Length: 132
Image (cartoon, rainbow, N blue to C red):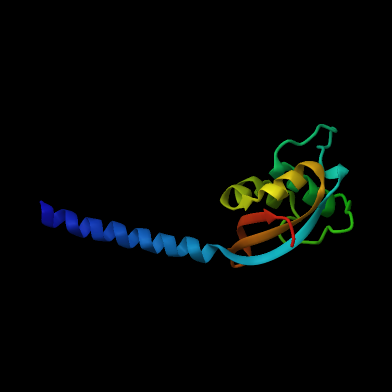
């Protein structure tokens, strides 16, 4: 019985290493842009305050791409021009992170840096921080 388990352990280990290498490849930085969070980015279309940082980022990108509302510091990005791509922001943030200073700015306003990670031009994660 012991001889049957060893090849299985080896196969599982090999599969785990293969998957880990795929995750590492998927985390290449493919782009970055800055965003200025202004008053219009802090509320939804009905005027209610947005409480989740990813929702504020989503609203900023909608304002920029869909409604043509931008402030000095907002930059164009090739990733979040469609409503479908903006829907992915919650998942992308969950796979990346938002630094504590950036989280505060996403609640009160200011410039943040969004780094986009992915593969083949397709985002898989974003990391949000305050530019240096």
